[in-house]
Length: 92
Image (cartoon, rainbow, N blue to C red; front, side, top):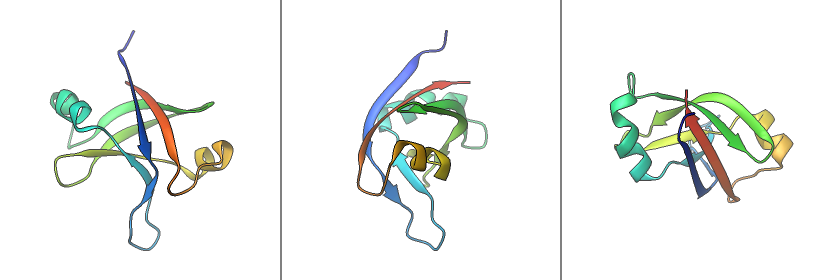
């Protein structure tokens, strides 16, 4: 079984038009998982509340990574900008 990673983070929005809602992954996770990255992406299965989905940790551009929050997950879990949520994921 894959090692679970869990963290709490504030939901943010990229400033450009149509920007993604996201949470930043802790730097310690980024550092640990960097060897698994393919073109900067780490394939994961993420869970927030009762919602799970296949996604990737994405590079932020400054050496850190983030997890995008799809609209269907935000709607189901009633998540909005500024909320502090618990996120868990396992590497796929």
